[in-house]
Image 1 (tube, helix red, strand yellow):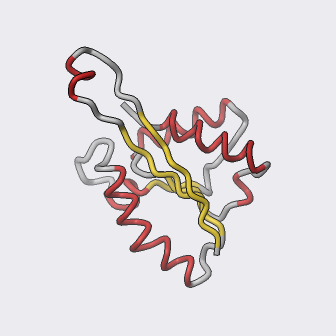
Image 2 (cartoon, one colour):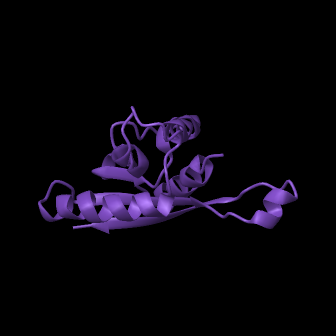
Image 3 (cartoon, rainbow, N blue to C red):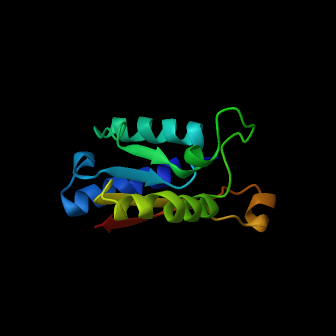
Amino acid sequence: MTTAPAAARTILSFFDDTKTSPRDYDLILTGDLGKVGSECLYDILDGEGVDIIGRHNDCGLMIYGEGQDVHSGGSGCGCCASVLCSTVLPDMLSDKYKNVLFVATGALMSPVSSQQGGSIPSIAHLVNLVE
């Protein structure tokens, strides 16, 4: 399970609504897609003619090293909060970044639907952080 489709839809909708593209942003940051989810995100966006490679990073990838056995990472909300407060906001204050798309991702976990064989919907919220 990955939240990459939700992140992709949110990013594509934002670009369409604002008439912008990846090159308009210093950083496009997702919650906790991990390596697998980030690759899925790239594939989905590539199918729509959008390339974010080189501008994208993922909070889970920033926290966990490749040598750690975390599979697809940790908590999307925990990774987002940690990276935003420890890295992104200080980098914006030091003028490293002036325009950041911050795409928090997560799964809407329901024990009832999972036990009944239902899918686990995912969600992505996008905030445009501008200096």
